Length: 113
Length: 113
Image (cartoon, rainbow over all chains, first blue to last red; front, side, top):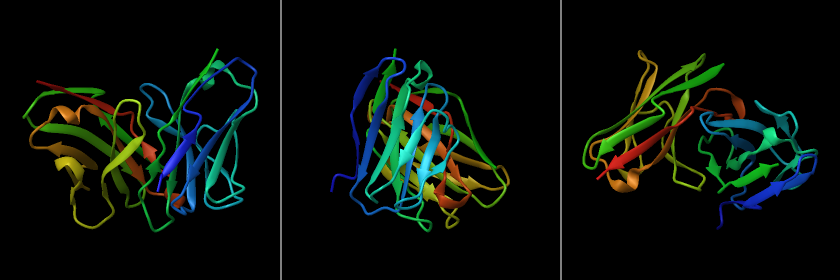
């Protein structure tokens, strides 16, 4: 049982390049989330999903897209990376509406130059 | 709307001393409250949670927190700090659907030998 895993762990992009971050969970959780963490700002919600095939915008969705084609995977895409997207990205999952604990992945450190 | 304020971005305590990390919340409905811990270069791990049961909540590693509705507070305490407690701590609140969680900006705890 690996919990929540994220791929890749580190990435450096040039401005304008695109990439996809992969989050996978093996706990059969319904809800999944993408956050970004920046110094002094805590974690901010980018997008979330309440089930396979669904996605919704969070607090800071601009410049990102997501997809949840399979229940266990939640993909975060950057179509045209900008330096402002330099951050640490965390994926999390939660079992469902009656549960409250979110389980976090180890993070992806992204630098956009 | 929901929000969390953590007082003090950095807290230093001596090994063996009391740990007190402060958190105040704002929520229009009865909230669920959480404390997470983040060790360097890792994801967040749940320390404890309040979900409208007992107001004094005990968590892992000897930490506990007390929900005080009148003060809108959920401070984290530990009677005796250990070197391994050095980490960043995040208070979080959830009062909406889909377990969307709002995080505070974090408090870095330093333990001095």
